[in-house]
Structure formats: C-alpha cells, structure tokens
Amino acid sequence: MHTDALARFGYALSDATRTQILLTLRKAPQHPSDLAEAIGVSRQTMSNHLACLRGCGLVVAVPEGRRTRYELADSRIGHALDDLLGLVLAVDPSCCAEHGCTC
View (cartoon, helix red, strand yellow):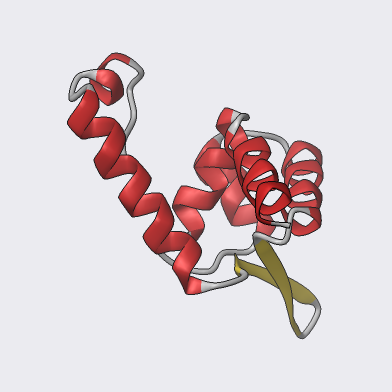
C-alpha cells in the first residue's frame, strides 16, 4: 500500500508539466484555464494532466458554478513538495538555476 502511494507520487512528479501544476496548486487553488495560461500549455494538455493527477489522488476538482477549481487533495502534499524542493536544493543548489525554475 505504501509503495503504491509513493509510486503514484513519483509518477506524477516524473513529468515537468504535472510537477509545475502541483507546485502552482501548493500556493493556491486554480481554474484549469488559468493554470494552462500560467504554465504555457494548451487547455487540452492541462485537462489530460489534471485527469492524471486526479487519478493519482493528488488533486481534487471542486465545482464552482459553471467552472471547476482544482486544489491539492491534502495540504500535506504541499508541505511534502516544499520538503522535496529543500532536499533537492540542499543536494544541488544550482539545479533550479540551470533549468529556469521559478519555484
């Protein structure tokens, strides 16, 4: 059970777009169109990635009238992402600078 949960989390993070989505959602809930614009992908691409993240249990869709807002399924996911970022930066502080990361 634990290995499946970690494998899903790892799978989600294995794609740069999904990782950007999670990092963005750790700051605040977003609508798919706003996420797509902020990250620079098509709405269809965003829809596919959000479906994957929902399937992994990492994000939830919250209906808001005629729109849907996405947020992390649990606030601890955001804390885990912060911890992972801190660990990666501690191991290799130049990793983000080389890749244009703005986290």
